[in-house]
Length: 293
Image 1 (cartoon, one colour):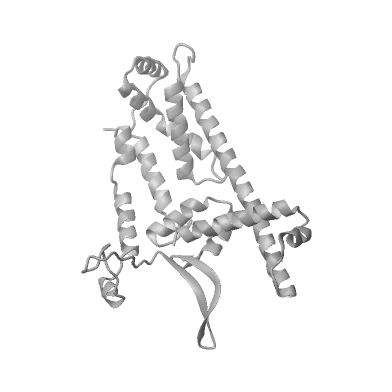
Image 2 (spheres, rainbow, N blue to C red):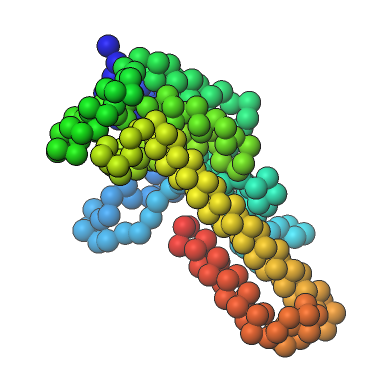
């Protein structure tokens, strides 16, 4: 018997349980360390005094280095699970793929996703297998159910969605290689399907399949355009910020003082106002990183 839409999206599957175990394994802190470093495990000590303490293996900040056996201050570096945040950012910008998802996976599961890891492919394969069980509807049946939906039958909505999930997957596959993972494309395709079901008017649009495909493709195209535009803008901005920082560093080495915005602007061939805007972007990024510590 085919699963309903809620079961497909919200059941705790073996794949989810496997990810939960991986998350638990890579986030465990040895109990002995709390005693060793005198870290309180609650918000109050034995005297009722508030404490601010904790242990984590998720992130680390390196603000010093050893020189000739002496610890000296250095340019700060933030690490997520042992990876320098600068390397992570450079990696997903160079590869032109979503950085948020990659970083979230790293923080949760303690390792970076990779193409050799079959997890994403297994999840998609499992999803496709479930789609095969969904009841298929004829065009005439879809129109009857669509009219029931207009009349307020919420179950009709689920029936139309379930019957067309496989179609949404087929369309999503056509958009592979354009920036998003297949699992993300399927998710966006499903959103387009839901929009189609909600907006379909059986007395005006006589062919649900045609309307459905049009709405799914429209949503996918808009999503990819927004994603790629955002990526292009982020890459361009990151390159300008890096260029500004390189010029500022070179200037400081040459003149043994910090460069003024006007001096950086002259070397970059842009206005002083543009330099100040780049500085603001750079400071905002640092503030975000500080909040994540």
